[in-house]
Image 1: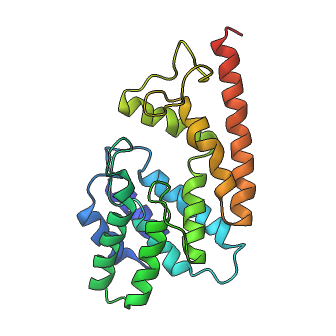
Image 2: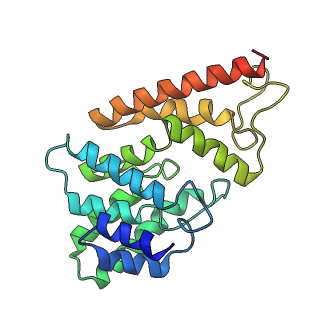
Amino acid sequence: MTASEIEDLARLFAPHETLLAGLLARWDGAMAEGDGSHDRSHLMRVWALVCRIAATEPGADMEVLAVATLFHDCVAVEKNSPQRAMASRLSADVARGLLRQAGWRAERSEAVAHAIEAHSFSANIEPRSPEAAILRDADRLDALGALGIARVFYVAGRLGLPLYDANDPFSQRRPLDDRRFALDHFETKLFQLSSGLLTAAGRKIGRQRTDLMREFVADLGREIAGA
């Protein structure tokens, strides 16, 4: 990450520059050069969505949300790894350590840690606070819409997956398997995400982005057929 990029993040997450510096010192590459689906731009998009949703949720603790957003993907575990479900817990542990060093009270640190742990789809942890619900919705919304489409095929390229099964693109005669085919990920996971969003604002955005993805998949099907 360049100096100017670090300065941009520091401005975005002020007054938590010290925590940002501690995070960058320990960053294991999740948002560095390795994973473009969980990079600096993902962090900034999620924060923008957090702010948008929180504006409709009275009482949301913006300090907890800011720090939880900052740390939510700080430990990278590849999507096809058997340890994937541990990523948010590991990220929460990093946050706990740095917040302890910064002198945060235990209950505040745990509020941040819980929001981080509960944001992950694969961790399957139920949010118990408004902040956890907001961060979870914001992170899931970044997997939907035009950005969601881009991320599906970016990740598929990183993992060496084909775009679709040439013999059965839409899984009419085979089980869905998004570990083998990129297109399967829409039906396996993404089309279901909006129904699990927890905030009214998140659900509204989610419906719009899901409709866009459905239109894309329908267009793709027509083009595969030669239209």
